[in-house]
Image (cartoon, rainbow, N blue to C red):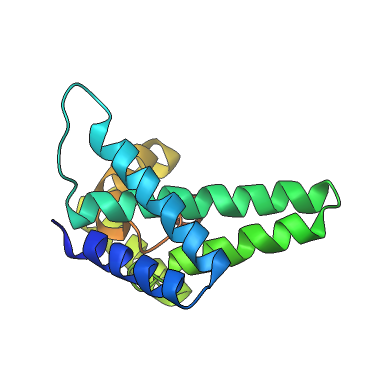
Length: 152
């Protein structure tokens, strides 16, 4: 079993004992999402830590989008709950890249591929190379925006 999944289960037990409702419900939801990912497809499989990071990243993104939708609908209490869940999940993700680190990583990738003069036509190749490097450490839309800015 992966270390991250063990940590989620251990933290769930601890939060239940401490009677932390929000944390407990969030961790239960995460473990359910992990189980669903494990049984998806033709055969059941054990997820690696990298796969778990992808599941957690998806869940964080869902919470942020839901919070924005609740804000737009004028439901501040629901938006606050979604943001709190997002913060709890983010605690299990690797350290996020800073803006300077992201700019440097995109620049070095563009230089190593030698596609600086191709403009936006090279976006797919650059993103394909960057995605494995930034998975779980940066939001895909932020990475794409930086790639667009540097290729333009």
